[in-house]
Image 1 (cartoon, rainbow, N blue to C red):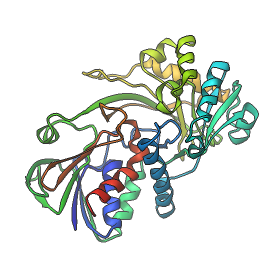
Image 2: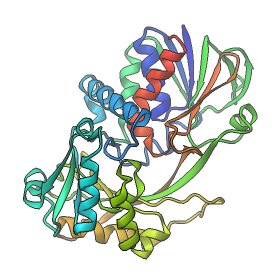
Image 3: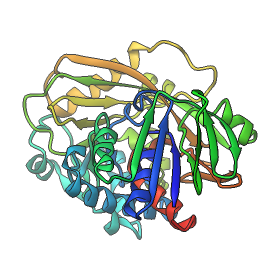
Length: 373
């Protein structure tokens, strides 16, 4: 079988990976020289802890297994089983963490409530003040800026993979066939469009009523911390954002403990992950209303810096990078992905939202299974 994959972000690259793994020939086409969208502008988290139950959690857990397997074969992606800690500072926040432990799937997520001392034994860099911390042993991390590049290097060794960067697919010319902006036609048994947040042009022509929206976020990265941050770190505002924490305790928290005004305005929670070079990736915000701003706001950066510093008990290193990114999210946020056959032999796979890096291996595996690769 010959598979044409359009898009070289993490979702597209994982589709190419599964196709090659199953013995097929793959041509992967990317409009940029290399991917430059949400797949490289994220935390690199394989984030199981906050996922909704059912399909979303099953997908995240399967993806976690696949990331670990892939990391053994392609060490350059930087897979590491970090786990995560969400420190809590008062009884209201602790109640939400304790309610999470009562979930039927708490053990599958690796939830435990730790004392502050136990949390610091796992992550000694957390020298700030907090009462306890929710531990999720299933969380992990990869290196988002290089993971796709390392996977591509591995794919190229197969002899069944070809990469074409700097080409935009403009037209579906027939069953399993597309034309790019160089005038070249690429034909196969299947075309999979993994175009991320690029929802205009050909995507709009093929799926004019696409139930997917775009979301913008702001993030930053520091110089090396100078010590290991052994886990990912979130704050209690993440309880408000992720569906796994929905409970009466969360309702009480929302009723009696208001978010910081900046965090509320920008729909924020703290997430913090250490990169392989020692720097910290910190964020984030969520902007849903179009048109998006073209600039970045300083107040959210100041807010997450304060929260991060309160946990590590020291000033952050110098900020090296600030950026904004845009990802595609299903308008029905309970859906993991939008997967649709848009023409004979042509499928569109988009809209994972902030789950793209986490869930992409399992999303691509399901596509491969559904299409009989």
